[in-house]
Length: 308
Image (cartoon, rainbow, N blue to C red; front, side, top):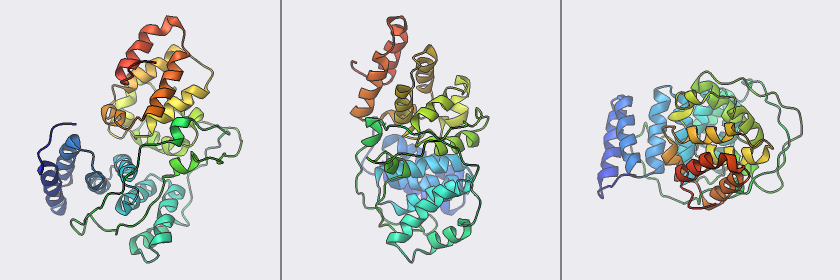
């Protein structure tokens, strides 16, 4: 992150809000992005998510809203915007979970009620059948969550009141005692568009081994096109966990981790890696033979591992 003056992030956020009110959404995104380069802030992430929603860039909106919720689980506007993005991506079952959690604590929340009524009878996409898995330690202990007071800005941007504390479905599924049903899986085909990847990622993110298998089908040259700007903070821990569960220890896995480090949002996502995730990555790297040592050393440097 760059250096910041005391008011610089707030000034950029307010400038972004002014552009937003004028419906100059690309300019708003630019201001919010510059602010986020200085400091990760849930309110700014939430505002940029809303701008992306208005620009119909739903994959980016989902990523920003999800990141905002991880920083502040009480950020209701972030949860609502994540539900909107999920709905637009065709993932209505996931969107319903967010909306129902809002209504559990804010029974009169008009926007959540209206959106839930709109989508509750909509068909879900074809179900992806999955196999039982044992969760990785790194998926049980996510980044430390903080309670951050979120103040209102403009009416268009702050449509939903604060006041909900929730875990994402990813975090819920990582809790002790949860095991998905054991059924055969048919993985989606390799993605051609960012939309394809985001749909598959949201559906498979509860199942690390299956996601890792899917990820290995993706051409390295497409990483930035598919998720360079929408890379979710859970992607790296999920991938490491999935690779650990696979018996394969091939050069393909190492090359995928190296090429992942070249994705646009990698450095930001690296900030979310806790010690548990880094330990899991070290464990994975130690399982490769000496013939892969050059690649292993490169990954250790790229992922900021002092030693394994």
